Image 1 (tube, rainbow, N blue to C red):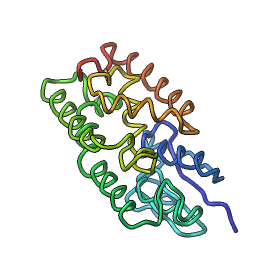
Image 2 (cartoon, rainbow, N blue to C red):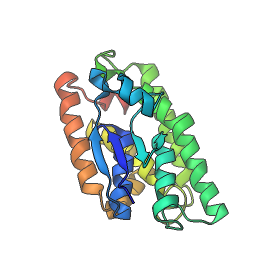
Image 3 (cartoon, one colour):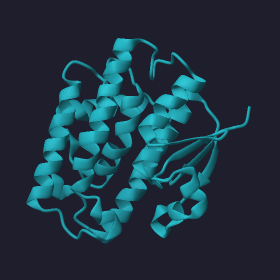
Image 4 (cartoon, one colour):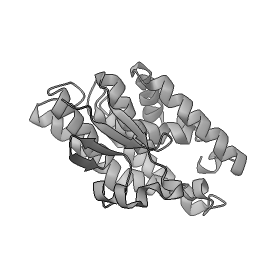
Amino acid sequence: MPTPTLYYYPTSPSTRSVLLLLKELGLTVNLKEVNPMVGETLTEEFMRINPEHTIPTLDDNGFYLGESRSILTYLVDAYRPGHSLYPNIPKEKALINRVLHHDLGAFYPKFFSSFGGLFTGAQTEITDENRATAQKALTDLEHYLVRNDFFAGENPTVADLSLLPSIATAVHCGLDLTKYKRLNEWYENCRQLKGYEDEQEVARQIGVFIRSKFPEGFEALN
């Protein structure tokens, strides 16, 4: 069976969540880097694969799939069905999906809107409104950890893999996660993930880049 191809950009949080999954499952894919910063997701070739021109994008023998959270769940179902990261148990799967939907529809857009422009130069400061939005997003996210060590239970799932890169990026850019007790404990629990150290290294590199452009880093979010 042909090996799937993942179109990716190494610093993208969404891409990194899929890379974390690949390490956890021991899956091999062909990696093809696509740089959205220079328009490589807008080429005719890439638009045929993914008209939404987003990364990551998966090509599994002609089956094309964008949106990282869909890729996460598909890879488990297709290659490791029943794995604890996305088990074939309706109630457990529902709890995981609930967190994934919250991440996609609420946390990621609100949290990223607070500082995303710093990466492109469209934003030169973090305002009081940005700070309030980020803090509210983090507080809302923490509610999912009231009863559990991880976001959908007592063990890591694809929900945690989806969220870790965004949080790690913010931490290495200066977010003080100790102000969010449950989130900070969860972050420490994630050390057990096979790709944790690789993920931390990418987040550290992003932190260095941000501070070269914006010396205050994300301390303004605290």
